[in-house]
Amino acid sequence: MKGSKFTSVMAAAFLIFLGCGSGSQNEEAQEKISVQVEKPTSMDVEDVLRFIGELKADREARLEFNLSGKIARFNYEVGDRVTRGTIMATLQQEEILAHLEQAKAAYEKASADMERIERLHQEQITSDDRLEAAQVGAKQARAVYVMAQEALKNSSVVAPFSGSVAEKNGEVGEYYNAMMGGPPVYRLVKVDTVKAIIGVPEAEVPRVKTGQVARILLDSYPGKDFHGLVTRTGLTIDRFSRTMEVEITAPNEHGLLKPGMLANIQLVVDRRQGVLSIPQGAVIRDMGLEHVYIVEDGKAVKREVVSGVEQNGRVEIVHGLTGDEQVVLAGQFGLKEGDLVNVGQAAPSGQDQ
Image (cartoon, rainbow, N blue to C red; front, side, top):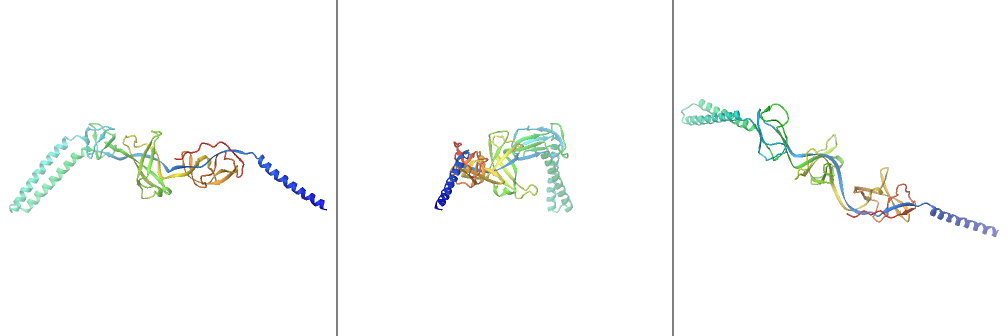
């Protein structure tokens, strides 16, 4: 009986020994997956909103004659710089000037007559009716004189601000009809600064403020950044597009920014220094969730993360890593929790900024 019990105990111990040995051998026999790892590094990030916008002149005006007549002279051509108050074009003015001289003479005579009759009236030599008639005559003559002066003014196109000629229409000797719609005589633009109007989505409105920096990128100048500022934000949200109108103004000292150009606009709404980052490819996204794999004791460990700004091939990690982990950045696809891994030579680490 004792011999039988001893035999049973020995058999059980032998089976346990075999089981332990088998597990160790299975683990050793499991194929290791080659991966590359990198520790998270710090970097400075910019949180950027991206838009497409058309560049516009800072100021623009359609200039026209306010009087009909034959065009006598153009003083500027397209591309010319113009100073505020400069006469840019005129109609033929011979008849206008002649009428002005007549109106001036008539007004001066009517004024003199009125003054003479007022003196006589004070001396009670003339009647109230005659005084009233003289005053009405002087008033009417003055109105005609003012209209003649206005006609002379309207026969010229004057620059309302300093700028550049963007468009010119008409020819000398051509009859200009002020009552007919049509292209302007001149289109004057001010392009020392340019602006762009963008529509900021309603959800992003709280992040946009005047004074924020905007980068302006143009296909015409690859590799070159222009910079502007948010100079105006809207007061309301458009009911159809659900966006707020925002104006960006940029200096244009050398005239490289042309109204009508289509620009990629990057609006910097936040800057953060020393944030934790890893290569973008290390983050696996699945069903709206994000995770990475890290290596602990030669095994793959799944770690849930929350990412932030992506910049220059790297991504900010807002939550989930401390900075000491060995994050898998190559070979992570197909990994499962607990897989044995063989860590190869680490990829070049991102540099702190």
